Length: 164
Image (cartoon, rainbow, N blue to C red; front, side):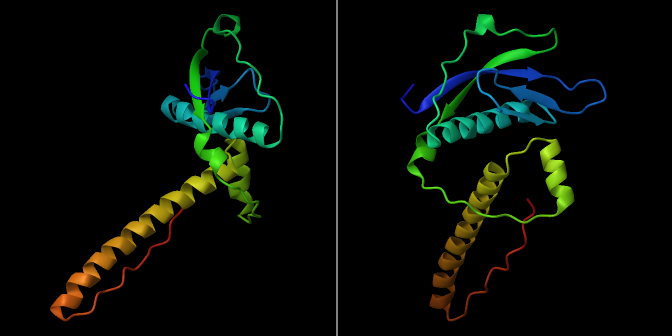
């Protein structure tokens, strides 16, 4: 493990009666929690939220506490605990900018209900979209070189909207 990797224990709770979400919280970190529809998604989201919570603490010059001993974490019968690793090396090399976001009120309400991290989701969606565009541009470039050699002009790729 390097200096930019942290391991904290997450407590995963299955959906409560009448609910449909697995909840994940980090007992050692205040306001560090998430939820998802499946256990696998909850674990993946736990990795993202842990990374974001730790990065935010470092950025704002707050101390990162030592993780509790797993034996000291109290669980109810249906909860389980698992270690989650967060690697901050990639985040610490980036410069971040604040952006104002406007979105439909109903989407914001649903996202808050599911405790979604807006910045993380937007960054991941933009990265995926950029990779898609770069791939299309690269393919178009290769295709245009071949078509120019045969005397025809390349067709431009039409980009379809992406829903996030």
